[in-house]
Length: 362
Image 1 (cartoon, rainbow, N blue to C red):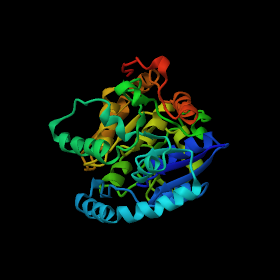
Image 2 (image 1 turned 90 degrees about the vertical axis):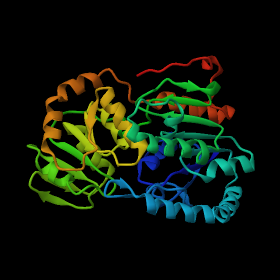
Image 3 (image 1 turned 120 degrees about the vertical axis):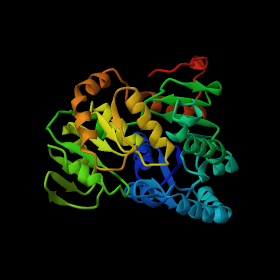
Image 4 (image 1 turned 180 degrees about the vertical axis):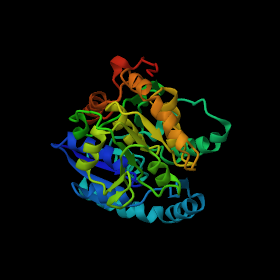
């Protein structure tokens, strides 16, 4: 049995869902998580969690709240040394053998300090793997995320990057490997069908025209993420639960969501086209939906007005999206866990038999 220190970014639930899928795959090992906010709340149901905040991204009305994010993170940088010393005491008591980090600040630094191997397993470091062909308007957001990936969340010696696009890429002698997404075990057991409804999921406060847009659809819409229950016309509001969400995902015709990589990946794996409204100012979400459209798996809009034509045009293309999804590879559990197995036995993700491989599978 190994003791594994696992740092998880607590903004939203996506990082926690991914890290929980990893931890559940290794029941023989002992895990201690470091997280905060929604991530800590979600992980605490199953594992011990030390709550220490990382640099965060705050959202309001489906846009990056730049000023609030700046002040929140300024407080973090002022307090970080004190938090690091407190966390170091807890880590030494736990005496970990390995560290894993999912876009969390402290764990890779502490792993260096106590002298144990560490690997990063996230999606955000996709920006270090390739320079995307994007509009000029997105370059400030790209530069911001690239700075974070290479100057703030950059202390891990190796990086496993999960992504439904650009999989198969290796850089810097194997320091970065891009593999298909990790999916929750319950998702792998689903049997997708089309029961005629649309699944809507937004995990943050969304724009004013969002619900009016859903009301324009000529079919039922199951709505998650609005902290409400009940029926309003064609909308059925539900509170988030893993079983309920996956049942509705299994039977939907397609998904409407933000730009979250986890939700998009789960939908694509089940053959569900996606229409996305990425959070304005968050480049990782823009990049996800950029490739969603480019690869023919769905579409997106940056327009936050209720325009019914957006979805009526999208519905006419559903058959084409579904045909494209049959050609994709959206589950990387086997490859990712093979890499993690290698890390937990050798302290590195590098497979020397494949060290010379460099290519992109799209």
